[in-house]
Amino acid sequence: MTSSEETVRRLRICLVGPAWPFRGGISHFNTSLARELALRREVTVVNYSRLYPDFLFPGKTQYDESGSTHRVESERIIDSVNPFTWIRAGFRIARIKPDLTVVQWWHPYFAPALVTICLILKMLSSTKIVFICHNVVPHETSLIDRMLSTIAFLAPHAFVVQSQEDRSNLLKIRKKAVVASHPHPTYDFFRSGEMTKEEARKEIGEGEGPLLLFFGLIRPYKGLRHLIEAMPSIGDRTGARLFVVGEFYEDSAPYFELAEKLGVSDRIMFVDRYIANEEVAAYFIAADLVMLPYTSATQSGIAQVAVAFDRPMIATRVGGLPEVVYEGKTGFIVPPADPGSMAGAVSRFFDEGWGERMAPNFEEEKKRFSWASLADTLEDLHSRISSGK
Image (cartoon, rainbow, N blue to C red; front, side, top):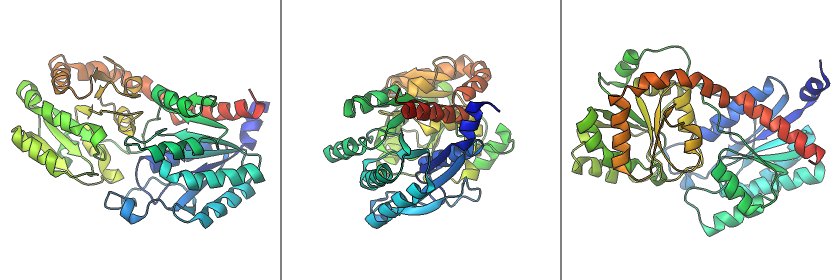
């Protein structure tokens, strides 16, 4: 065994962030990272006992009700509204004596809790603290959000960002931050067993013909309105149908009314609910093309589900999406809020047979987006800040 391998074996890591029984992308991310790190290191996950008060949560439930859960053992300590639990979490992590503490950062709402924990760790331990930023600032931001982010970003020794836009956003807040970039890894855990496209379509109640998929929680920045506006042209040119699959975090009525007004209600199937883990595969396998019409984005977990299922994408030129969706390789990039360009890209995809042409490219992309690669990035970053370089 080499000395570097011995160092890795001795490395003790604490992950701070949501995990099962909480649902959603950050929980899935934290769990997948914990599983990867546990293959080579000693890992503890400090989880939340409560994420949001119910009155602040826009969805139906914060908990994962899937029959097939993506989970890891964790200590549920942090209540986002109870400062005593923040102190308890800080002391608990200090007793673990981690060499590296990795904190999931995605919204300034959690800044008071995370700053408290980090201050305790700095007083009572020698751990190095790294924030993994899913969004440096929220999609819908305010002055108080920026103030909280500015305060919180004084706490860690270093950061990992997932796009160049977030790197730029971070350096505007903390100019001399130690930062490493790594793209969002692939969510491959949804892919369990094999299912044919025909079987998948039967499961979701869809027949033959071109099929588009918009997947994920529906909020204004996701740009669904512009995709619906493109559907008349898409339908006329390709005959494609669209599945909109995900829980609305805003009023759904304007979307239904827009589809009705444009005469495309019969081409759009809305599945307005959070999709259980075991159901995800059917929608992605059934689809020919995944649509990411965002008007703003730093990265997208949905894109990484698409990569896991070898599904080409049409994405907008915003944030980190062009860093994930390679033009002519794994999809096409179009301007944001441009239904005409979106319709043209969909038509080109089907008319020119790009599905088969892009299919061989995904295996190489999965290597670039691996959890092992992210773990290596964290290891390198730990070495860098420990040595003071």
